[in-house]
Image 1: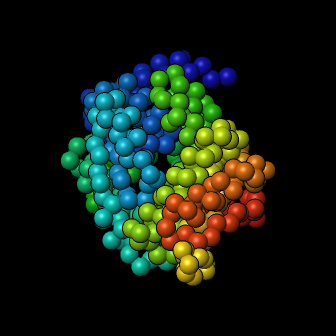
Image 2: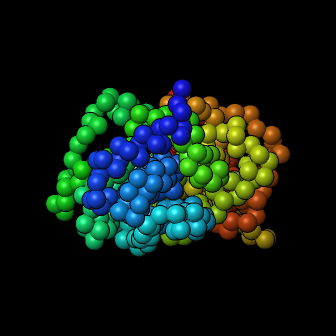
Image 3: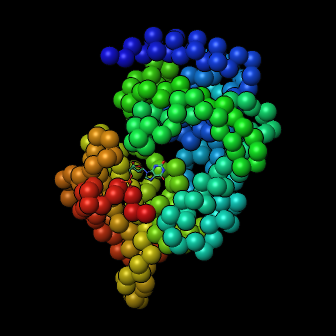
Length: 308
Ligand code: XMP
């Protein structure tokens, strides 16, 4: 059984010893793992840790403001709006795997620029146990990371032995807000895996608005505790609809609700019809360019949770 306060005290001692008076940097996404890691390392080395939050333009509605509000006072925090750089690199790219690769590459470029300014020697990562167990232990606990620009950083992973529920316990002990600790997982490539086909600012805005409605209604009805993830996918299928007296072609949005323990498998739970209908009605009414909403009924396997 994990004893959160003991874990925190022991980690602080270990981190202090390892980093000493050097500088460290962490990529803070606002997800629970990197958030807990940032606050833990800050306790050990203070402002020698810089947390870099990169806005890749693929975040959800309100996310930038939320993350900034939580961390700007808590951490030595750097906000980088690189959304134009990401969208430019992604222009015209259709293939989901290519999108992921481009996002990963641009992310490293942006992050490396920041790490260089800081003259960091250590890179803190919020790796947790399933991350390296799933990759068959390929990530060694002590390793250096050479970034493409030539920087070599020593990697420190203070929560690598923990599982998600334990990370949450540590987060609570560190007084992080409950909304952050219990928030649904959100993939690193963000809305890029939920907008099918090529990405544009307009399509991202439609997906973002539909996602906001899903989150609002699920949370209004307090269904979030039953769900691992709940979101909207913007397909690239155009469907006929009626706007006013005229026929109209608009997008098809798919609603995805899944229950899961660890994302390895997932199932689509039964939810009240009223909830689903309200979300669907709101999306077709409030989000222009959407003419049709459908519901995903596929478990994992055979499907994956995300659509791309
Ligand atoms: P799938 O779609 O593979 O997703 O069933 C399993 C879990 O992982 C998340 N996911 C990602 N997380 N980078 C991430 O950080 C990614 O590229 C990525 N793809 C999927 C997904 O949201 C789900 O929780």
